Amino acid sequence: MARITASVYTSHVPAIGVAIDQARATEPYWQPLFEGYEFSKHWIDHNPAGKPDVVFLVYNDHATAFSLDLIPTFAIGTAAQFQPADEGYGPRPVPVVHGHPELASHIAQSVIQDDFDLTIANKLDVDHGLTVPLSLMFGQPQAWPCQVIPFAVNVVQYPVPSGRRCFQLGQAIRRAVDSFDQDLNVQIWGTGGMSHQLQGARAGLINREWDNAFLDELIASPHTLAQRPHVDYVREAGSEGIELVMWLIARGAMADCAQPAGPAPRLAHRFYHVPASNTAVGHLILEDV
Amino acid sequence: MPLDKPYQDIPGTTIFDAEQSRKGYWLNQFCMSLMKADNRARFKADEAGYLDEWPMTEDQKAAVRARDLNECIRLGGNIYFLAKIGATDGLSFQQMAGSMTGMTEAEYRAMMVGGGRSITGNRVIGEDGDAQAHRQPQGQAGQATAATDATPSQPQPQPNKKD
Image (tube, rainbow over all chains, first blue to last red; front, side, top):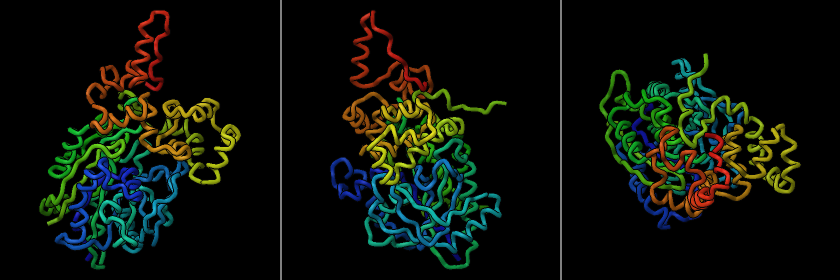
């Protein structure tokens, strides 16, 4: 049986990818940030459940694969391969992403029958939203060490899906993974955020207090956090801070959110740093026990 | 019945909703075209000619040519699309974001390294935070404006249009 064993949460700031690709991680500006991921790079190989076979990676496309011609609220990548996209600076020098078409198709069929109307993407170039988290957790390997199912959420055009909807989708994804026959160690990652605003006179907004309260609540009381309205994210964490709703998909897929509820996850790692370019970086690892 | 838009009272912030998206459709699609190297080269060689290939408004074209990102956003642009113009110009996201505040690149970078812009006074229009319309532009540009402003014969500074 496939099983979800852990969830990972991280910001996916494009400048982090540039710093990695240009070997600038040891510079004074970047060193404190990458130090916060040293634990994680060790954990991914040595955690109690073992290395992941598949990462279900929740991210958002930044006007890369999806223009205004098509704006799917939730899109699941069911292809065998996904190419790193050229976002205008040339593609990142990172490996091709290998998917898991069987599991992805199984999840699509299961959650659609569970009333979540996904868009199915058989061709999808993946941008920094997906590749920066892979680089943060795996470093710079010749090939990514596991298969990855890209799951793109619209957080560009308002209204984005509610926190509640994202949380419930996470619960449905857990049910879907649980019903897949092959024996697979699956992790679910929620990415984006934390507080940041990239536009207008309020550009550069950081709300450290709100971000850390969000982390506290995500760990301890996700059901309550899922009820928070969009406008709170936008007002308190900036217009682009709305990306944080995606973290609730990963959190909803943990055992304690299932019915019947399992035990609360173990907090393996927590990290917060300001700034990476315009953005507050948050990072959590939760293990099902 | 009108749609509920509770996000319209946030200072210095334009939410890219369906209404903005409709206004900005061609502006944003023009930006998407800059993801192809050939198009970037053609745009750089003849900006006006390239923009005329798109059914954008003249205001939108002028805002692109002026690289006025605040005006582009007011006219329906979204930052993730507009970022393709910045990429074409060789700018980082931080340079683009900073350009919308009136601060110099160094001032904006220093603000971020210092922990970013404070939320205090910047939650709701009408407070007194640094993102409020009456405090634009920011940084030294704002101080210069304030000095000029002290002379009675000078016109009042224009508040940020999108507020």
